[in-house]
Length: 341
Image (cartoon, rainbow, N blue to C red; front, side, top):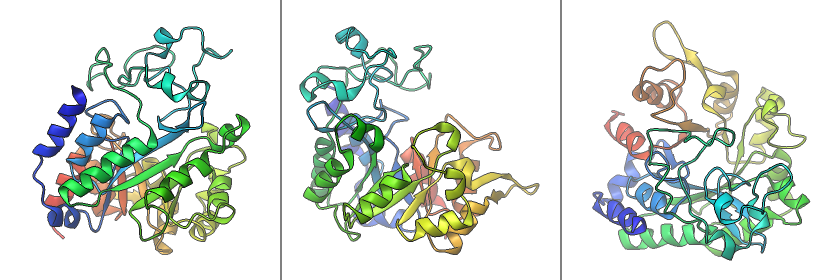
């Protein structure tokens, strides 16, 4: 039922292909995990709803199933977004977590997806979003999301793109699965294998990004995501170096854009209320390397912003950032449409 509702919501939007693409020609809007501010992340209804909001791209985080199928989940774990503990109570590992790679696609499809919860407390991370108890959604495969997006592109005569993240590639290889090869295979199969195609592959692991470009010979558009060393999200990656002028120079030779966090590009506001740009952002702009910042959330503002409009003004008008991931794509698209050139 929610799947139908998502499609209806998308269909109810005013479809104007020329306008939809013109609105964000100068700024890229990426629907972060679909319309995740309104529906549980990475579900097909969230994708359909996001599509109707006219972003430039819809994001997919990709992990692997036990039988080698790329599926769309933000984490390698299942317990914070599904009812896996109820359906398969004994299938956790020694750390108490349930891993997607330990389940076949058929088993994953039996799970219900709900709004994200905290792994320690079990409480809903964003309490004002879709009710946690309404866990009536399913895990999509990577290809299912692409089919939905391409199908809507055909039926609405638009070209909203795919923006895939390869999750924990070193961990996946240690588990016996080469996730990068699997994602590239799907991307190329569906026409996202060149820089002219409307798709991106992104990754936090700098070593893997270079492998994707140089060893796996992926010719599509690549994005290097930037984290912090303290997050321990990519082995042997020195994010402190990547944020330096030398690091930005190294990335510019491999990728088509970089994806830093909001606080890595805007350090706050000046006394007159304008964004203070970080050295990393200045270094990227000096090299004309596009920057796609994450994540703009209307319900999780930085300390320096009193409301969401202040955030968008700082990102797009003050700092001149090229694009942004957002849980609320409708609000960002509307802001950009209303902002005079």
